[in-house]
Image 1: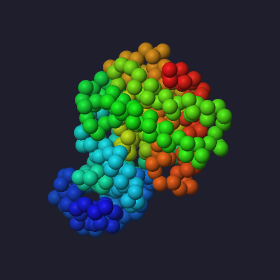
Image 2: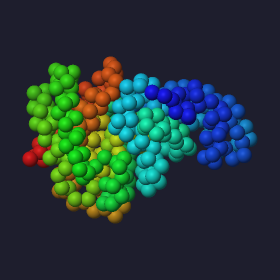
Image 3: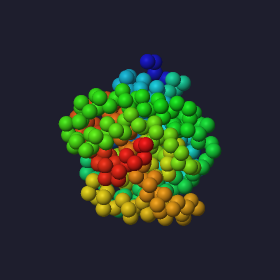
Image 4: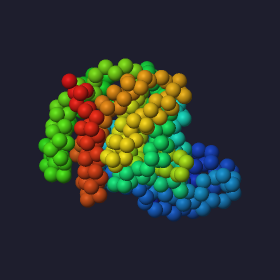
Length: 357
């Protein structure tokens, strides 16, 4: 796999490269970057992130003192998988084409690059520190959950019924021919090995639901639900950076067209403990409905709750395929186990199987 003509590792994005890219974005004024250092941050599976700290000269007071750059994975197999799934392309095109159309808080993007094979990319973005990502292992607080629900409503309301989503070749949509059939084939192929890896830590009830869902994904995904919207698709703790008053969403590699409740169900099902989710979900689904209403999208309470119940199954798909098509290690295996336990229990608690037939 040959390297493209732009930086794909932190050491390649030196002061001169940063100066040229930030100058083009307009944030340096008449000044320049004279030096830079970097450190890796985060725990990404499909790529690496680095914070580049800048030494500036002659720049305005509001010029960034640091930026974060997102790079492709170092592992060539992961990069090939990213290219095959259009992972890097999805994220770049979201930032280029759609981010400005929603009031959802996302990072300011200074520069982007994508090679023609889709196996390498560069995103230079706002450094969101001191905001910090959540953890899949801990379970989010109620305060954080409320912040995420507000942001999810901003995204969903901006794209409900948007006719431009389905034709876009980079946005996965069950309304496109063969999409849900293809995903079901992937799930059927992945499920036996996934059960071999994680099944020993699942309850009989959780496993039974998984066995029922996998061969019926296509029915769930392609059913008629009326107007769809844009979903982040992987809205979980570690893809969100938090301050005391703000939630900023990153990692737009799984954007899809889907139910307005998908991101809400996925976040509450996988990023909160089972006990907290059970206590909060009715309240937070109502909060989501209220936030949608403020944006002019009205969803009846019974309809919203039914959509939420069905959308709980999205978490199974993301977790099974995520664990299958990313490089295994001790931390990621523990994360995927935590997620699948929560998502399957979510489906069991809500009788989500009602939507499989």
